Length: 372
Picture 1 (tube, rainbow, N blue to C red):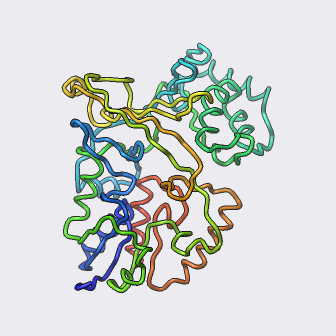
Picture 2 (cartoon, rainbow, N blue to C red):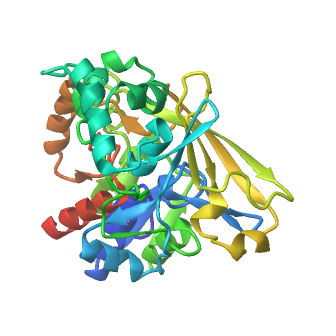
């Protein structure tokens, strides 16, 4: 390398991009590399027939942290999108999260008192004092009807395991509302960047050197030599050559389709398919993230993506850490190795083996840079 940098950042996803922006602002020289042929990591959006397609699944930004909200809006304005998913169970539609609309659709009840009475009746019949798994936890919170229609099949497809084999804590904070409110998130701020997430990341990386299509670990010694410090956002077990074995992930594959001449396929950005028989977990219709009302008709086509959840295999893109006892113990071993590194800083979903919402990734990157 002709130039020596203060920081080499491996990965141009949100953690890498935020770190790069904040370090550059402090006067440091930055080089970012990414093994993909595009920036943005899993938040990358690509324009297809005027529609910003979320290439790696739906990403809906939400936070109650005003500092984070102001930060992302300083690069690009966010729109008013509100996440209100719909569940399709064997052809019948239900609103999510569980609220008065859901209870009316399930039982025909019209008041909070009636809904609470129905849930209490089912909880008494199936209640478990000390829930030992996800199934017992869900039934003790919401009753058998909603569990069987809207939780069981979807969860088993998502995790590839029976609900009785999944830990109770996964669903401990199940949102249950006795209002007619379909907003999935309780956070104060919510939206999608106008023009897509790629535009947001591009703004963050202005003034930084970026090289794509480069796998850092293929020539680690060479890349390490070009900078004083390294921020690594890839898989932690791969960094250490899997010396303790592979960490487990769930991954997602996408079947994306351009529907020419169809202005509105399903009427909503997100429709979950909660029965066990439908092979995909949900269908995303991308134009609904940024187009509302008359805008739908102004764009003559639409793009949909069917999502399939499966067990991660080498070569797949890792998405969701499997934070059970076995994997947590294995990660602890790798973290000990990571903590002993003096040149390399580990950050983000893959490097910390932790599922982060986008606003939490940004908060974490801010913390790391501040510590530096």
